[in-house]
Image (cartoon, rainbow, N blue to C red; front, top):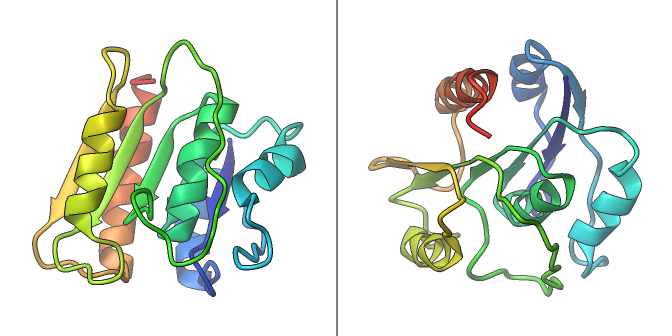
Length: 167
C-alpha cells in the first residue's frame, strides 16, 4: 500500500508519526512549500499521479491539499484539522470531476484555534452528497497539534475502515 502524507504549513512528518504509518505501507512524504506554490494540490497530483497512491493523509494545510488530491486519485483520505474553509496562504481550489466520492475521515479538535472546527463542519456539510462516505471524529479536548496517541488511534481506525472497503 502507498500512503501519501501531506504535512501542514511550515511543518514536516515527524519520525514518530512516520513509524506509525510505516506499519501500514510505504510512506511518501514530500516537502511542500505552500507559500510559494499556490497550486499545491495540482502540483502533488502531477508529482504523484503515476505512483498509484492508495490513501492520502494530511494535516492542516496538508489536509486541505489532501482533500483535493484524494478526489483526483479517487482514494480514501484521513484529514486532521484540514484547512478547508479558510487558509492563511493563498491556494487555488482545484476541481476534479468524479462520479463518486471516496471515503474521508475528518479528525477535528474542538479546541483548535488555528483551523476553526465550526467552519470546517460547515464546509463538510456543503460538500456532502448522497454518494459520500465519511466519518467525523470531533475530539473535545484536542487543539491544532495532533499528539502521537491520537494520531495512532485515528490511523488504526482509518485503516480498519479502509480494509473493510468503505470506499
